[in-house]
Image (cartoon, rainbow, N blue to C red):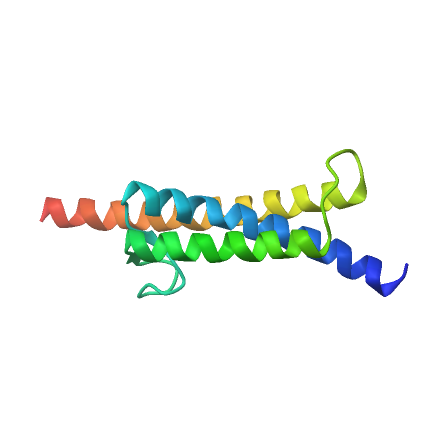
Length: 116
């Protein structure tokens, strides 16, 4: 397989991951809800402002779209589209597991603070 084909497939996978990652940040920003970003303290756990979330989500969307402009996506049962979906699914699973742990930890901390 030529190297440019491998790079095209990597670009489609990463585009799916970036597009998936933009969704929670854009929605949190638009709703005015704090949500963790890599810029929070601690990283990826502490809350960031809605404005920062909107900007971070927009940056993720921009990178995803730029990758898709490098290698346009053809919707259908083909390797490129399947790799794009694999990027979306893998990022979605990682994000849901990570933020599920973050929310559980924050809920337990709040509960302990109320019972004292």
